[in-house]
Length: 311
Image (cartoon, rainbow, N blue to C red; front, side, top):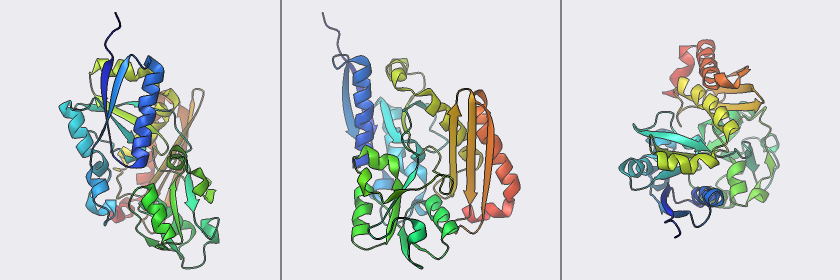
């Protein structure tokens, strides 16, 4: 007799990108276990970060606004796993929950999008850049302090419509998100990470689950990408040491080469007027320690006054 398929409820936000990521996890689970072995249902869960569009995330609470309602249903058992963009995840999770898998990372770069110019450096003096990210704002103003920044909340499609409507002359979006939506062609250019480093975790999908739920851990195991997991352990340790949230302009990126890890981190003032960079290398077994040490060193270098702008 055929065995009964294992049921898996996936919780996700309802944006087109969030759904594309949830479907990618579903498809990978089916590929790993067979269509007859798993019965997967995707649950769309409304979150504050999507409902409130008229204010910056830094004004209404930060990263947890994209996860709290989903995590509540995960904790209660209404869903079995949650699928998120890693860059949206707080470093402190609710008791009993953990990030149990990271899928292989996509392109971590930011995409520059404009109907008139090809790069930030080509924008006319005093031009308007639309972004809801303090990191992107700070990096853009670091390169072009003359630019005017306007808030750009909403999903990818909403932001692109705002651009077409003339709310701004250009905007910035994650290349990974555009690729997952099949919209890479809207990018005028991809920005070199040496001048525009990504947010910690950018480009990686993560799966959140309940600690000790062995059935789900076994099902998710084939989806885990070890190099991405190690890189993000480093980046998230850096973020946690700096108490990073959507109120903080922080960039971080770790790369793995065999048993070697290389980490680059940046902290900035929101207006881009001051920035501090760090590069640390070591062994992959020390990934989290390297990220923590990088954060501690930048705190010492920048001094306490630097972080007053982050409050």
